[in-house]
Amino acid sequence: MAAPTTPVILNPIASATGIRVGDRMLFQKDDYSGGTGGSVQVHARWKVYDDSGLAAADRVFDSLWQDDQAVSHGDNWMLRFGVDMDLKSNTQYWVTVEVTNDNGSDADSAASASVTFTTADDFTADKWSKAA
Image (cartoon, rainbow, N blue to C red):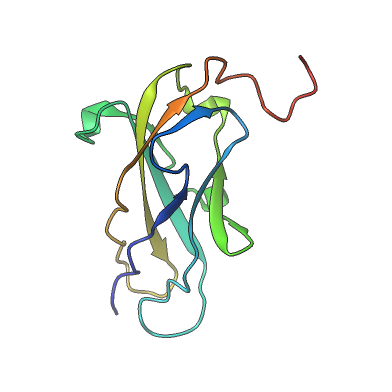
């Protein structure tokens, strides 16, 4: 069976600024069936880097295929930025995402094109909290 199609990151948009805890990372939803038809469970692996070279040594966050990381959100799959990502405020990062599925192909998609973003001056201030 074929590997899933390469995902496309929709959010953050390229060169986004002011990213905070609670903001979403989204990639375009597909059936990710590996060309066999029908929808299957998707597992996403988000990777965040502090250098555009995307080297393993520059990786600051890796979701490691955790099932709970890929949440269906309308027409897209999402992951919220969280304090567990250990990102710094006012810092530029690059993100990619890969997908795999439960169709038995044991193949991962190619990594998406990287998207750069910059965290807010107060990245760890949850945008959804009521605290000022």
